[in-house]
Image 1 (cartoon, one colour):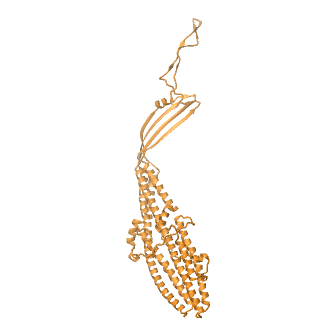
Image 2 (image 1 turned 120 degrees about the vertical axis):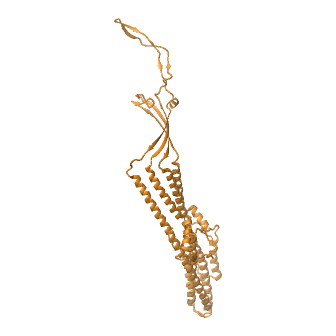
Amino acid sequence: MQQLSKIFALPVSPAIALAKAGLSAHGLTKAGLFAVVLSFFGLTAHAQDTWSLERCIQYAKDNNITVKQAQANVRTAMLSEKQAKASRLPNVSANANVGEQFGRTIDPTTNQFSTVATSFNSLGLNAGINLFSGGLINHSIKQAGWDLQAASADAEQLVNNLGLQIASAYLSILLGEEQLENAGKRIQQTQEQLNVTMKLIDGGTLPMADKYNILAQLAQGEQAAVQARNSVELAYLSLKQLLQLEPDFDLRIDRPDVSIPVEANPDALSLSPVYQTAVNTQANIRAADFRVNSARESIAIAKSAYYPTISAYANLSSSYSSQARDFNNPIIGDPVLGTPEIVNIGGQDIPVSYYYIPVTFPKTTYFDQIDQNFGQGIGASIQIPIYQNGRTRLNVERARLGVLTSQMQQIQTQQLLKNDIQTAIANARAARLTLEAAQKTFDATEIAYQNTVKRHTLGTINTLDLTTARNNRDIAETDRTVAKYDYIFKLKILDFYLGKPLNMD
């Protein structure tokens, strides 16, 4: 499998209903603003049917076009195997000819020349079976079996890769929905700060300019919310494309409690044990092994041309002719007075009369001819190769090169798997350190922000300092959320190589 790219390069922030409606935050009360934000969450969560990660993967397995194409390849390989096995069976064929002959032709039933128009019909049944062909059939069946297993492994690997892509899209949506909550909280906090600032302005502690600074901050929040909402829609669109769903399909996913597994420790993993496990679980490794075995069968198939081919055959045949006569059952008529003939006797012509008995031969009926002309034959044939212009030797050499090529591809697949596993372990370790650093940064900026809020409430600092502290806290919170989901996805990749099912548990 090719190296998986990092999916969380840019944070995804979902929009809030406030931005969609085009409402101004500084024009709402605290309770009204909070109600609008919660109404969006309610609409988002109000889905009659939510999809879990497992359901998404299963649906894609059943409906994704690429998966269906892979399954069609499996069925094609299955038909090829059936065809190879059918080569052991005899072949049977029937033939029939019917026609009319004109002019001087040979009667097919008597093999004599005739100038009478003749109708004819011939029937035949032939059967043959291969007795020996140098192992060609057996090795072809074995090769077809290996090809079928390779196609099945390819389809399985495709489903696994698709599952990783779906998990990536699924986690991107979860990331966006979590940032949606954070966006709602930030707007609410900004509104609260506006209320506090207005009180301080009314009390003469802060200048009127601070009010406009916070209003500008609220406007920026609304703009960011619109952009974030678009990002969430794009994330859902990406998942729909993987699931082969229509773009307007109302898809909503489950929102499980996504947390870092307590037992997760990428530092404890090393290449060798993970690779040994992945070799037995990764379908592409099995597919490479099957193709090597299939290539080895090609050598035996090519060598079979060195041996003779022995086959047996049998046939049945019969024929009919409209001119065939039944000479065994003549029809004898009554004596008939013939035309008198003049005979010269002693120099005198004397008429002589005579009688003759007419005899005719009837035509033989169709079924009687079929029965009388019925013939059978049985025999065996052998074809011995003597000289074939070196083609067999060259085919054997090509087959051996095919084995070397498949072995190189097998080694390349194994090496790529090692590289991917080592990269996955390194990425998981780096993601863990990044999350720990992001958590520390957030904790520090949160403390600094809370302290700044207290000082701003007392009027000891201006709004600019408060805005700066809040922006630092918001950036740290975003980085922490992104780092969290990035680390979770890196752990899912490791689970994939360890043969664990993809789920959100």
